[in-house]
Image (cartoon, rainbow, N blue to C red; front, side):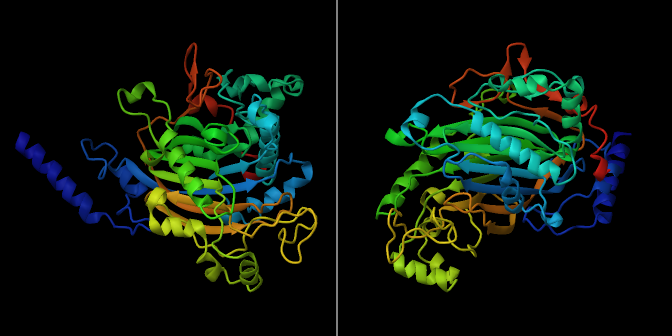
Length: 479
């Protein structure tokens, strides 16, 4: 009897593979399993993860952007600049996940570096980002699901159907208290993109947004944040990084927004390399209870990793020669003198990292008096800093299964840097058996550099069923 059962199972195994059509994987990750196969063999247990028909792979589009805003506060008129930066006019290039990194959202003066954190600017940026993302699709939007994080002060105040939301205690303002529950419910119900994680350290700021449909389709879990200060004396936050770790389906992601040491003197690139190594060494995301005795996850321990920001690498080239190549738009020749390209080729701290081709003008430094012109040059202009133009603002990635679709800069004249962005296509694993849930940061002692949320009354874990109970109806214009 047992032999007959074993024989039938073996025959079924052979039949499944004989009828399965293999599909080429553009990401070098082997043949995928179709949704049809998943449904047909959902009851067949005991397979390896590589063969399990209940594990399917899906394309995920991730937008990564970086912008040094030179200490300027966001204004309403910036909505058009954000629209261009996020490339929202091209519907075919909209993303499932938007990860935005900013530098110098506050002026880097002694007061802002040494004083305690103030979340005002982070709040303003998040409000503008949320409005830009959601207004594009005709979706009313009032406040984000997660308010921006000042330090590590998170907590969860309830579930959306009662009009409550994830908020930072420091952000309970008169404006938010005056909003009715119905208004807040409308905001949550119709927002196409949700703010999942947000973190600020002095002027470095990261904001992560996910398309609402993804929250229904996949398990979004293990959302953790970490900041590493490596500026003055190696431990002040004028330079350093803020990072977000999270899992989408069965794939782990790490996003690192960084601001590295400035300077174009010979040897300054060594300071930047050292800061990168410190960020890699000191970024450690807290363990979850289910992690057991495993080591805390590090940056390179994730499946997909993105490093972006004002990395400040310059050109090994005299100013007048650099400007001549820019005038000719000879980006290939100019890339030959780029410090970061050399570091990527040589390995070192960037062993295994990749970057797309730089086919746009250098992003720094533009004149404050004429934002269409690079600062300095000959003849020298009074009160202008003499800086050789350079690609200071970059987006890199690490790990298999990532394909870059586009890499470009935007033309906002808001600061002396041009915004840069990259769109990626990657594959994620989705377990059909998994219960969709969202794990987000909650209350953590202030001042802790790296955190995942814990509450006094238990884990900050909410099932997506409860999160989207009143979110069943799509935006009226996108049903």
